[in-house]
Image (cartoon, rainbow, N blue to C red; front, side, top):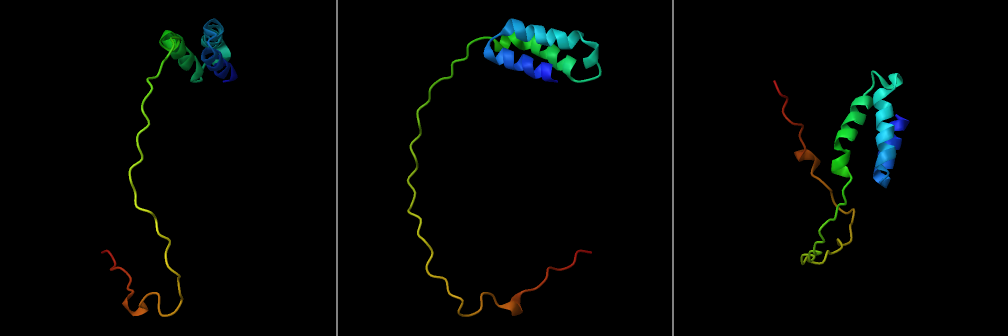
Length: 96
């Protein structure tokens, strides 16, 4: 597991030969047999060429913020009077 993470880190840093060696080690070592790591290492080996190129992302313009109305703070809250009419509160009908 650590060896796989090491390979991913090496690949991310651009050291593709060391990453390839780490993945090949995982593929060949019997201690990794029965885990997902040999298959993952094989996939990384097969796709390493796709990941080794330089990626340049296109720069986009920053969108303008839409006009919004100003948020108003609520008025003063009071505890005078009932909050709800408790005579109108009812439980939902039972489902048969």
